[in-house]
Length: 202
Image 1 (cartoon, rainbow, N blue to C red):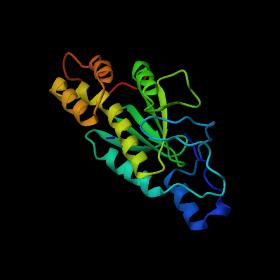
Image 2: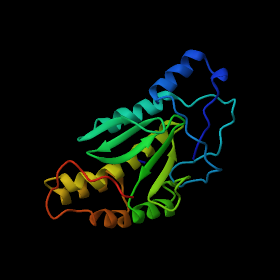
Image 3: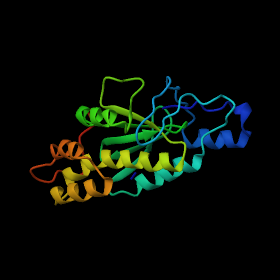
Image 4: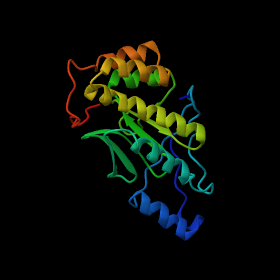
């Protein structure tokens, strides 16, 4: 396959639309990012003008539907508003109301993604495994799913009966670099683990 805007105030969008958005995301709003950089795979713009309106909610719905369809994935309200995706007890990532997608990775994977311009460092915990990406278009949606699938693969290979084959197939489908493949190979288990994964420590 193949960072945040500020949600417009309730007065700048139809009242019913505002209630629909806040209802879906638990009524919480995500704080804006500082100015963002340009990535190789997709452009991450800076702050959205306050009067530009809200993100197309259809894109976020599509993201949730695609990720929720993967085996062993459950969807939960995120504590800061939005949707959180889990593989067992481990968080794959979450999406906020402004279209911000936050995904945790092992630090080495995160560093490789940033070096290749495939994600941005997290704005609140930059010295961690967390990454950030913003969805504003169909192309952004595909890249966000790509990042989520990469996070998913880390846990899926641990519970697969054929982890080496799964890693090879997924690496081809995702177009992973040799470096990213080698980093994921470090998570191959000696034997399949339970679906209930340990809490994530990025």
